[in-house]
Amino acid sequence: MTDSKTLADRIEDLLPQTQCTKCGYQGCRPYAEAIAAGDANYNQCPPGGAEGVARVARLLGRPVIPLNPVNGDERPRPVAVIDESLCIGCTLCMQACPVDAIAGAPKQMHTVIASLCTGCDLCVPPCPVDCIAMVPVTGEHTGWDAWTQDQADAARERHDRRLARERREREAAEARAAARRSASAAQPAAAPADLQPASQSSSRPATQPAAPTGAAADADAKKRAIIAAALERARKKKDELAAQGDAPKNTERVSPAVQAQIDAAEARRKRLAEQQVQQAGEAGPKSASESAPESADGPPTPPDKKPQ
Image (tube, rainbow, N blue to C red):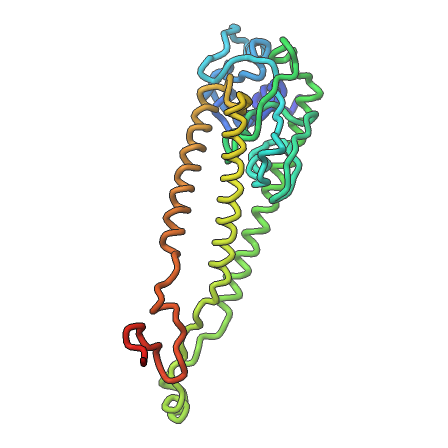
């Protein structure tokens, strides 16, 4: 029976399926395809380590070469651990996890399912309160000595299921958007003003567009206030831990690529804080003359002209 697997399929079978993107690609499958196409070298997978390089080299009939340090170092496999006292329930780590190893809900504390975690580090940079630590769990064992083929196969299956779910959700969202566009286009246009009866046009003022109720703006402002308060509480907690010498250590021993992601996330947090301060200033309270309600007889009397 002829083997129907492509070269990319066989290369993917040899990868550890952590989906960490340290190779420079968005997962193990894209990396395997790049190797097969000759667009990437076969020594760019830190989780696979030296054994992983040797496996792919044997398949390709190429010499065994050292792991490229640009992509990271071979290390004991870590597991993500979330500090419950700092987590604000933002769900950003859940969105980043490629194998659905984090459970939680919006505004609820999240937790990592340790048996499913691949140690990819991808949940660390998006966390706005720095509450995730990567804790080694395999002692001195690294690479394929710290990761079994069964674990790799299970992680690959979970990643494939996640990709399929995201594709379905994306298609459903696109279908809903198309339905809304169709419904909007099907609505009849308003009758021109010159076709309306003269009596109606003379006795009734032109219809003005309805003023927004402000409910959406109020909801956005409330959401920003909640997030800002949660971030402030988390910062205070971090300062207390730092003063006690217990500051989070989740940024230690990370690759240059992950450190760059952490720096970018920190810059985004600073920009967000600046934007929130600016928006709060622009949405400040109205002046007394703007906010005072009009009386039945006309506009309010200025303070300096009130009757004595």
